[in-house]
Amino acid sequence: MDGSPDIKKELQKPDTQIAGTAAQSPIHMGQKAAEIADCILTGQKYEKETYEEVFMINKDNVGMYGVDGWQ
Image (cartoon, rainbow, N blue to C red; front, side, top):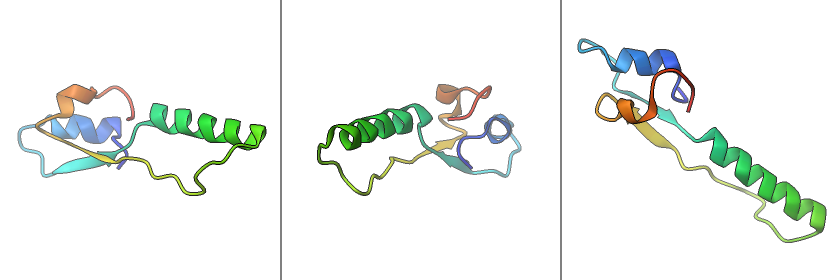
């Protein structure tokens, strides 16, 4: 879950039974939260609900994300 380093390490193993892990970008989430906070503080309109894009990390693309940290 959430692109954990342990799961991503497992995905690199040839005999893994794990298909993948869903993840989202904490950097993007923080940026969006800061934008919304700024809107609230300055009285601007903002979306009451915000959805974060979720992506799948599997054995085919785990190399793009590294195994040392969370997504």
